[in-house]
Amino acid sequence: MQRDFHHRQLWQIYIYLCIEYDEHKMKSPKILLQRNPIFAHLIRFISNNPLYMHGVILGSSVVVAQLFTVATLPIITRLYSPSDLGILGVYSSTLSIIVVVASLRYEFAYTLPKKEETAANLFALCIILLIITSIAITFLVLFAEDILIDYFQLDTLGLYLWLLIPGFIGVGLYTILNYWAIRQRDYRRIGATRINQSVSGAVSKIVFGLFSYGPPGLIIGYIISQIAGIGTFSRAMWKIEEENLKKISFDGIKSVAKEYKNFPLFTLPQQIVNTLSLQLPILMLLAIYDTETVGLYTLASNLMVLPASLISYSLSQVFIGESSKLVRENYLGMRSYYLKTFKDLCLIAIPLIGGIALIAPFITPIIFGESWTDAGWYCLPLALMVIPQFTVSPITRLPLYGYNHWMLIWDVIRVCAIIIGFYISRFLLFSIMYTLTVYAIIMFAMYLVLVFLDLKAISNFTSRVAMQTEQ
Image (tube, rainbow, N blue to C red):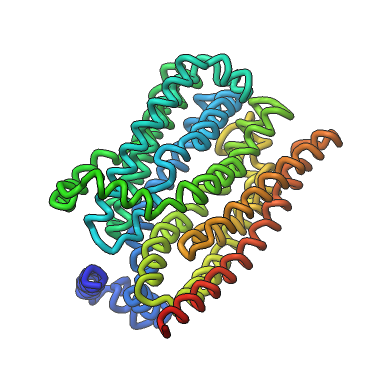
């Protein structure tokens, strides 16, 4: 509460300074506010709404990071071929799937404990699990390489398979620390790490590309883009939580492992299936077509997702923190908070994502080069999937309301539907455009179902807590 008050104070001071600056000029913010009541109302609205205040704080950093990524894409696409980007897509998809088990998703529970000492023990548990799973992944990659390549059809990665080890360790550690920052509602630091990730990752890819490193350069740049910020989070955590970290004990770790066992039991399988469903298109496209098609799809996906994620990521991070607070302190406000956020995201998603999809076929060859022309056309069917993904994914928190198993069931059905859709496309010898359309329709339908599940879970949670309160 005090932190929100400080944020409003800083915002008001900033507006005051802007108004006082050169008030005699026609472009003065004071005249702008006087002549534009809508703008003045917007500022007051943001100042008094924690979601959007924190969204502005985090979002401004994310905007800078994503704009830098978008700005460097035309350079990267001229240094690497669609096939190179396809290999990166296979690597990132594989890493995304296996890194889910890094700490058995206990980090998802990090925002729930009321006592900082309990949260510190939960953090220690996550680190221990990360060490164990990292050793297991290292053993599999180094000593069971042939089995992994044959069984999971990872022959495309070939000599780059060992890069899964540093990627796994780095991404796993960053995720644990990031959720600590979310618990602390340290959105400024989260935003700063996003900028570091974007800049360092893009610069690395460009440098490696100039020296013609090919796929290894893309992969190393990707790893850097995923782990930058670990040092920032670590220093901040030690500075703030030093006393609580010293209270970590074996009994405390054992206690939190038991208390939050639903996360590895239900959230972990759900997250594995969830990640698998998101990464399946790349793996399925590789099986049906080739690495060039995967590379074109990867660029098209980035074109659709990156602009939307400027807002979606920011509000997702804030929604986790604010909804966790509402669950603990004001559960009656959960439904209205969910619906309001969903409505606002819909109003943003349709014109933003739809507009990008319509112009993508014409601007892609100009910006990224003639070899990437088909990627612009891929954006048209993908828009049907990205719009509901943008509006629903940031605000879906079924585990928070005690319905981990619902999320798991939904994800299992989604994976099955996606696999069936791709196999039908393969059997009927569909072109890539028809295949992507089938995939997008399936995803659209599944996200509509997820909205219904969210509202039902919130309603049940509210009724349950109300009954417990009355008793």
